[in-house]
Length: 208
Picture 1 (cartoon, one colour):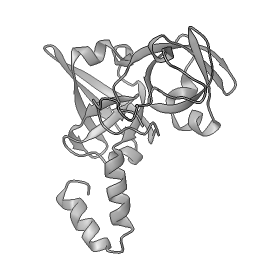
Picture 2: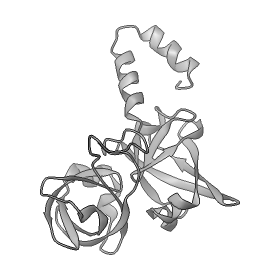
Picture 3: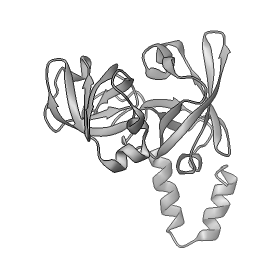
């Protein structure tokens, strides 16, 4: 489990088939083999590490369903260690299971803030609600004005400076994870045997 609060920006150092190595500092402070680290929002397992880097093995499924298959040595990535049970919870419940790849549509500067407009895949769009949570490249963000597969978020300067968003441009692809609570609620309602009630609920709360 993660929180969506990025700890540091690392860099891809080497890709050898399924093995990917990442240069890092902070996430290595207490690293151990088998630890989980989210890389641009994708939860992966540490298979090797040194004083300056760690390695993970990426499955073909993860390469196909995330932006990790498009990364090259030198690319920056957001990093977050799995949350400790007694840790401080600053973002929202993030599983590190990327639901799909979305896209940056445009960025509107508004003084010190910026409105980032995104287009989401169907696997994420169905769960978007006003003031709900969404994870973009591992970053916990709050949804504003979702309409169909489009939504935007307000990004503060601190988030921009401490994550890879600072390097994103219009058309950039990003990993997205929908709010896990919304996914469980919708799944339960769809399998509870009352389709009429489910559709009514979805319509009244902006899902349908």
